[in-house]
Structure formats: C-alpha cells, structure tokens
Amino acid sequence: MSEKRDYYEVLGVERTATSTDIRKAYKRLALKFHPDRNEGSEDASAKFKEATEAVQILSDDARRGRYDQFGHAGVEAGASSGGPDFFSHFQDLFADFFGGGGGGSGGGARARAPARGRDIRVEKQLTLEEAVLGCKRDVELVTPVECGGCAGSGAEKGTTPQTCRTCGGAGQVSTGRGFIVFSQTCPGCHGQGTIIASPCRKCDGAGWEEKLRTVMVTFPAGIDQGHRLRVAGQGMPGPRGGPAGHLYVDVGLAPHARFEREGVELITRQTIPFADAALGTSLRIALLDGSSLEVTIAAGTQPGSVVTVADHGAPNVNGRGRGALHVVVQVEVPKKLTKRAKKLLEELQLELKGGDHDHSVRTA
Ligand SMILES: [Zn+2]
Ligand SMILES: [Zn+2]
Image (cartoon, rainbow, N blue to C red; front, side):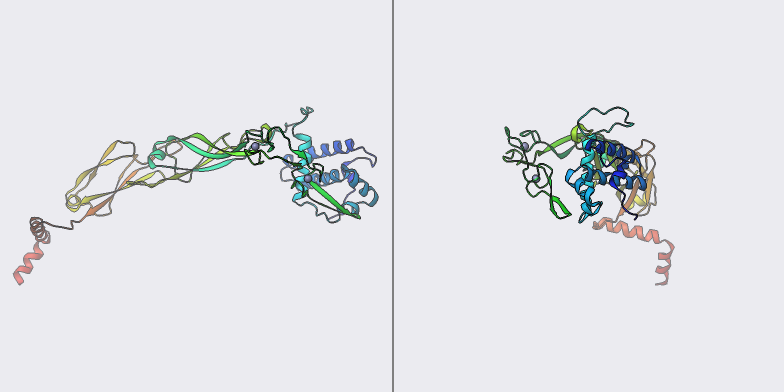
C-alpha cells in the first residue's frame, strides 16, 4: 500500500478548518463514495474508508491535536485499521447524518429511507390435502415487540436511563499512554452509553418482550415440500419507523396414509386378490378432494404394474397443468385356504399346466 494521505488533504479542507467544515466535507465525500451508491467499486470503498478515518480523527479535538503535532503516528498506534470497531464507528457517524433529525436538505438523489426490519423464517407443515388443494392457515411466530411497560427504554416507569458517567455516553473509553491510545468498549455501560438504575420489571430492562403473533397465510394449490412462501411486510418491524421485514414460510409435508407425492405426480398403492389380477377388475379410488375415481385393471395384470391416470395428480403451483395419478397394483396371494378353495386351486393348477400334466400321467 502507498503512503497514508494527509487527513486534511483527504477531506479537502484547510488545516484551520472548523469542525463544522470538516463534517460538511466528510458528508459530501460520504455521499459520493458511500458503498450503497458505488456497488462493487473498490476505489470508492477505499475512498469512503479513508474519508471516514479522517473525519474520525479530525472531528475529535484531542485526536486532531495529536495528529496536528505528530502526524499519523500520533493517532494510529495500536489501532488496526478497518476492524469491526472501525465499521461500527463509521456507521454511527453516518447515522448522525442521515438518521432521524432534520428533514433532508433536498437535492439528495434518493432519500435515505430508514432500514427495513429483519426477515423472519418459519416452517409450516401441511397435510397432503392442504398442499394439493390449497388452504389458508394460521402461522404462529414469536417476535420481540417493544415492551409496553417501558416503551422500549428498559427503565422502570417514571425513571429514565442515565448517561454513563464512565464514558459520558460514548459507549467507548480511550486510555492514552504517550501517543498510544487504546479504545475499548466502556466497562461501565458495556457500550450502551446509558445505565439503567431501576430496570423495567416487565422486561427486566431489555426494552422488549416476546409476543406470540398469528399470521394468516394463503398456501396456493399445488404447493410442495421445500417451497418457500414470502409474506411481505410480516417480518420484524423496521427500526425508527422503517418498513417491516418479510415473513418467509418454508413448507413441509406430513406423510399421507394412502398417497405419496413426487412433484406433481401422485402415487397410490392398491392391493387386489390374485384372481382379480388374473381376471381383470375395476377399482374405486378415493381422491384427496373427496371425490372418487374408477380405475380399470386389465385381465392378466402383473404384481407391481402401474396404471397411470392423466390429470389426476397434484396441480402445478404456478396454475399451469396437473400431474398424473399412478396406481401401483399389488397382488395378494391368499395365506389361508378353505378345503374347497384348495381343491379348486389344485384343479386350476392342473388346468393351467395343461398338456404337461397329461403327459406326465401317461409316462408314470
Ligand atoms: Zn420494559
Ligand atoms: Zn459507559
């Protein structure tokens, strides 16, 4: 990497610039080089970081003083550049500019909308009937909501969180020895900047509580295991009035007693007596929608044969077409025979063996 540029040069301000000038200069650069506006540009990202680092130092009187006196060596010893701390810092700075206060000074190409709330993902298991026919079902989610007892502050009613005395509300403390300055999370408030002397009893000071929420979700006909439905705006509420996140519902399928499913194909197994398989028969199959279907089993049907009935499977979830119903025929061999049944079978056996039997009789 090349030599570090002078912070004043980076921001394009005089060494005599006021702190207002410095912040203004930074804002201009930040708007120009912010990663959101320069997707994938490493150059912009580097410039943005450089400007952010510069404003961090120059907007802090003590650090600016050390910088003026000793240059980069006065402010950077021990501080790794670009660590997570660095980023949380610049996000805070950025929030100062764009969050909350002041109704934008116009001009801005795209207004800084408040961030969207987080998405929530839940699983919902449907029966095969519900999935194939479509349904509306309640989906329950547990989400944190602002505590009603303290309106989210975490402090007991009638009290307010106090600014931390250790860090003066910054959430960070710096310890200096010579030029070397270490920043660390404030041990007094754990980085919060405030201390809650009497925590809200309802939420134990957390500021939020868990609430069970029910969302009615429409599952379209043909939805299947592994599909994911998006319900817009039913995720977590956005911070500072931002739009809510989305709810994603991952669909699972409960096993069914009579049908298996492979995509839009439905499979059912039907057992028929071996005589029916030999002679041919017809089967009435109860379908998922409550209707029934007659299926013809041809004479001489073999065990494991499949009879396919088009357009009686599951619908395609996009509404186009429908799969087939496959009837797998299983043939049952009787395990117990009456005397008469046995005799008849033996006769049948002889009959089926035909000429072979006559021949063996003659030669015996
Ligand atoms: Zn509370
Ligand atoms: Zn503190």
